[in-house]
Length: 180
Image 1 (cartoon, helix red, strand yellow):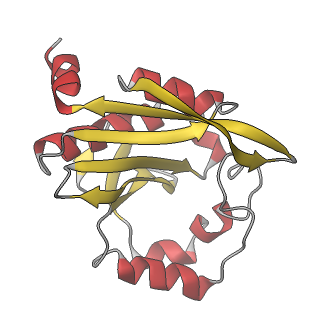
Image 2 (cartoon, one colour; image 1 turned 60 degrees about the vertical axis):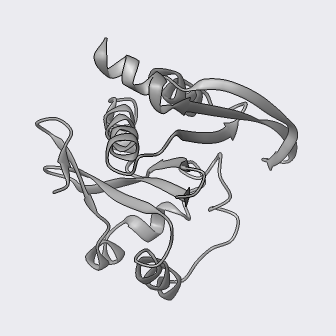
């Protein structure tokens, strides 16, 4: 366990044993992947093994979000970490729909932001989401991210063009949240 999020949830490193569970199937579930590209190009188990092996070489952090009874239910990550610019992209997937709407995304996201700012000395963490993704917009707002801009008609989702909203939070803004 890296961090305990609550009495029921914690985060830990993604493990090879996760590949034998429900994890690969999340990326085939069209409801889980409604707002990302994962459900468009299906991947084999060897793809996931290669991805897991590359985590040690990539500029990213991927944590498995776990429930004490249900096990691995999602992932939260910092991607495209730039140690020069001190920035990273936030991403999350909750593959186990039984845990949607329970605040676990907020708990895991906030802990990852804290880790990024206090352990990695990042200056800015950002994310992008479809303008139609109400859940991610609520999560970004709840974590203190600020809407910074719009990439017009940037995404093709479910047969139509959709704007992508860009959110970001600076270290000093996050510190104010922690101290309030």
